[in-house]
Amino acid sequence: MIPFNIPPYVGTEMDYVRQAAEGHKICGDGPFTFRCQEWMEKRFDAKKVLLTTSGTTALEMAAILCDLKPGDEVILPSFTFSSTATAFQMVGATLVFVDVRPDTMNIDENVIEAAITERTRVIVPVHYAGVACEMDAIMRIAKKHNLLVVEDAAQGVLSTYHGKALGTIGTFGCYSFHETKNYSMGEGGAVVINDPAFIERAEIIREKGTNRQRFFRGQVDKYTWVDRGSSYLPSDMNAAYLWGQLEVADQINEDRLTTWHFYNDAFQDLAAAGKIELPTIPEGCVHNAHMYYLKCADLAERTAFIDHLKANGVGAVFHYIPLHSAPAGLKFGHFAGEDVYTTKESDRLVRLPMYYGLTPEDRQTVVDAVRAFYAG
Image (cartoon, rainbow, N blue to C red; front, top):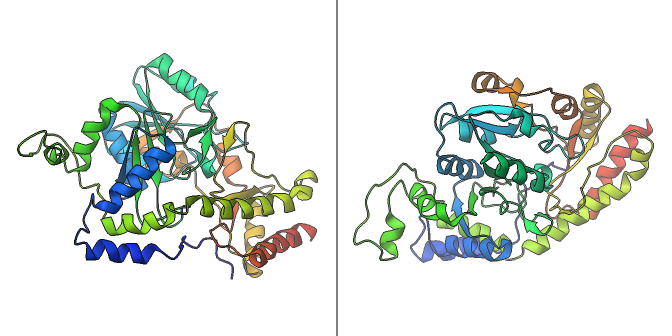
């Protein structure tokens, strides 16, 4: 069976984990943590990057930094993982779901403004499949209405929008280093602080609400509890694992892109014949091959397609159930405008195997299985 995903592993990770353990600094903010943060700050031209225990807690930190009050509204796409919503619901915000674009499955920038009310405080664009949302338009809307922007770039590490790294365009950006992502520390993430005015508070929130970082820098003679917060620091052993992959980030990226382009080239004739739809990469967007998906005609065909692939030794999965139709979505938010594409397009989408080290032989097996289904 060709699995849908295998976590990335390059071979140096355990050596670095051992170094962290032997250095007797395995809690948060050890040398590997700082190494990973500095790498991202330099590579992405980011003002401040802080590793977190997950992409979810990165979003939670961003939600706290937005200083939301109960009743404040947050606009986000319904087609996303629950973490995008729960992070803001946990601070009392009301979730306002809007439709997606059918070409990228990203938030439709053209419907955001109609969803804004006097209670709106934040827009949360989600860069699906590592392909950027239309950030110029979103940032113009945010500026016009004095709103904060939190980029959910969980899938977007190493992707860019008109030359800017995803996660560095909004007020905050959030990455994930879960085992399903391009670069992994098992469970982990990072929050990107793009407005220097928020950096000190972000450090405090991440350090259980204490000004411990100011103490370490010699700015205060002792540290104490000064704000809300939690323990968002990952173990330095997890950061050590991630560091092994960041060292060869471009190698991993090129390997995944090779698979992505192999699939995309192989299915051009099926798309031209109207049998499937392929991913769209808008002009100015450079993606990271986080996933390769295609769209079947409808839900029934997708179900038969996934069953066919499984019978032929290929693991494939569908993706999110739209949040606005989930029990918690109905409880904590509402859909603004019309659901033209979210439900219909999510019912059609299927993801093919995509991971670092997928062999040429296995790529061909996947292609052959897809083509066999549509030949029949």
